[in-house]
Length: 280
Image (cartoon, rainbow, N blue to C red; front, side):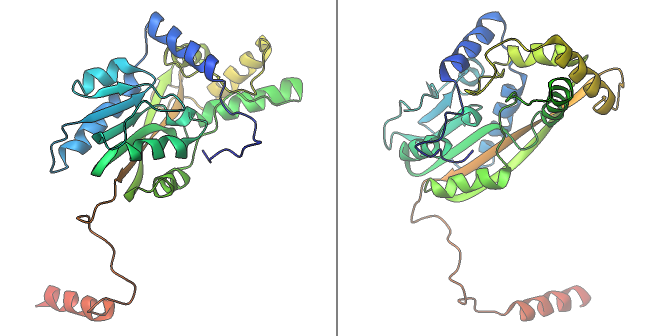
């Protein structure tokens, strides 16, 4: 999830992504992970001693987010976001940043839309999401055809994704992950669920012809052999890592780290004082 160089090939086939999302919404959107992310964000906001009065949500799936945040302005995750500078005290980038061609640019636009000391929160897939499927498909294709095709979107590592916040000029950056394990009957069941989530293969470099059935059959056998559900070995298990990024629009009222060397007490003296209190 690095900022693309001008001559770098596109990562995402945007028209294909929008078609997949539209199809998922029309045919019955599988929104469970969106609802988990929305619940997690609501829990985090409940711990902030502030009432947000002008929220906005950037997302490719307005349904569950409009329901979770009925007072928010819902904005599509277009390359140029429909957000006014300084118009919001809260901006949520909801389950779309992993598809962004320029994730830093998306966060920068959200940061500009914040008022002073406004809060930015992003939730997206990252880390080890679908690592089991990625490995099984790669092994199957290599063994069947001797080649390898782009099939699973590259996922950003949490450390790299956290650095995006600082690069976008946000203060007090925090990145953490919520891991969800999902169980499926087989590879076909998983593929149908990803389709219903609007998370199929929309990479620009994907194959433009149907994949051979024996590749999927072999991948399914690998999944069943190496990634069986521990609670029900007749099923397969996959990982979804929900990465949460949090940062604040800079403000003079925010706490700041001390200047190096400005501490009034040595660490050694502080530890001695703690040990003395424990033994007294």
